[in-house]
Length: 592
Image (tube, rainbow, N blue to C red):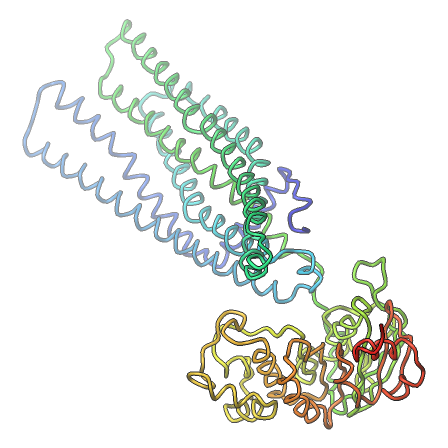
């Protein structure tokens, strides 16, 4: 799975990822500056509070002097600072959280937009659950970073700076000795980031695989139950789940050693040093109790933000790993084939020409080899062949799902890459063997967001393909709700809706990829007339499994191992008694 490979991580990559994440803050620069100034104000009011206690101890408590008015004012000032600090902290936290939500909203939109533009080959190699995990779980980790980590680091670094200034004001010599804490704490943080990075990568990979297995199991539940695969799926899911649990457990072990416990040890040793310093100083001169109280309080407050930052390192590491995985999608270079130049070519007649086209999905094994044919306007060209002969690949190339690398495809004399995507999708109607319906109702699935398709057009299209009778029988008829992937309809009904969807846009060219393979015989007979009407006046490229459905085709191409081995009408191919003839006899039950 391409998204779960090559995820080696270096410090330079991490720094680049962090800078790239910070780039999302640029549109919100003014709000960020406001939040920062509010944070500075909150820090200042917080740092001043121990100084008020120092004044109370030195000027009033130790001398046992208690003027009621002054002490009341001092108490009101202290209480006011506490409340004001809390209010400012709430405001700045809300600002950071709003910024975080806006950024993640933008990031998820970018991811979803990118997913619409990535080449289909990407999804051929990548499980859907892995992609879903990137857009949901990984962006959620980034959200946590912006909401908690970023605000916590900015706030606590500001608090640390304020505390250091206050400590220097109280005792510059002792504060200078305490500066050794900064390199020690930075070293612990660096060690944690270096050791935890591989663990977080493994955990995120296993979570993505967990989502992929869950998505696959839920979509294939009918097959799982029919084939009695519940035990196997439980075992496979359990193995992935256990691997994820082990990765998270290793992370917890690491947190238990390098985060709070180690920080508490450093704090205890520093507190012992400070008390030793003041104790030793007491032999030479009197120790100011207020200064001692304020210094110890500041030391405790110094480690409080350090502890907060150490705890948030866990979220920071997860966010960095998640951001790298998100950016892998955003930086994916294999995009859906684009239009070359600013061509205004129009598809009007519907002539389709394949000129010596060869194609390979992996760049090594050719699926199509030197394919050449012409579908004149209004003609029906049928493509038949055994499974794996390359039939669907012809449709994939015609729809420009994959780029033509060798040979040319022309529509109305214009090379396919020079036709605009909107014109191509608007003028070519596609019906697949397995129709995909969206959650909604009948009308929305036929209209499919095309605003030029009115309600009357929807009904006419449904009547045209013989879908109107069964739609009218539904509760709510054209507004009848449809479950996910059309689960509330039968296979034949879903196919009829997909026919109506295609006819609603009135295409010039029809591409039918075994469009009747999933339809029962009775339904097939009823829509064969509709198919004949659909093909009338339109160029049709039809992949067929049942040869009985394409006997009236103007040209039949027989594919074998990616090559056209026979071509002609139904009667001409039967007279040749070649591969088509054998396929026909097999389907008629006349060949043993």
